[in-house]
Image (tube, rainbow, N blue to C red):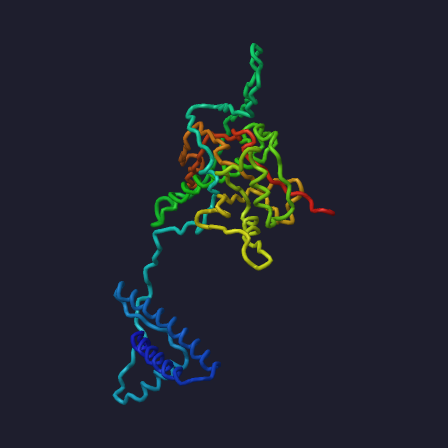
Length: 377
């Protein structure tokens, strides 16, 4: 059947349905009409696409016929007494295959923004970084005339950061690099960059502080947090945020500029809290990433307080100024390409590495929140 003819038939039928719908009062029939309109509109869109393709590649579009269509055509042929033939369909058997030259990336953020918000120190060529921090200041003395001055030495601590080698490795076939219109090679290199960042993000929180690892915020090896108080909770309640804010920092002030690091499920728990009147307890700004004006960073490496699989004693949330964690970069990211390893197979290999490290460099710089057993458990 000619597509142009079918398109006109659809338009006539749509106009006819519009006229009937204006007079119809039966809701069931109106629903049937709405479904028919949707189907006809979809068919019309398909026909428009086929017509556009036909115009581009200069061939005659066709539409498949069912048994009823074939019988109708045969009958029309019999009615033509002059014996003329009817062309049912024409077209090319082989049509070119088309491919979009772009690759749709992951439609959401695939790596925590924590990596970009901690302190980054450029130390190209180094291996070890030592950072001094003040643990406390002394109080002055009231001194009698002629008496010795009271000693007020500040107390210092030191955070040592040694290099950690972060690597990534990928393989693609030479066909993927040389033949397709899509730039798979660029996507592989992008994946390497994301992979390195994901590992660094994990290490900032969970690095054990042993050889070839970061000293993470949740690590027992973080000397700057050895004296820091720990807050224990077993659920996200309407007082949890206040408890975290007031537990952080010294006794002389409520610290501003601190940031929550938490699991997405715990953020959802904050969002679901309601007052007795049904109003939201917290105002969460998903654009500026704040809870009641307090910045937050989502990181999937945090355990969730609300997850029943999280056991008592596991750290779930951290709160503090992100500049209290430093990541020295001892070398640039180096990406190397090789065709030698699997030369016979036509495989192209990519490897990347960066030497870096991380540690908490602010005394009591983070409040760590862990899950505790509920009362009676």
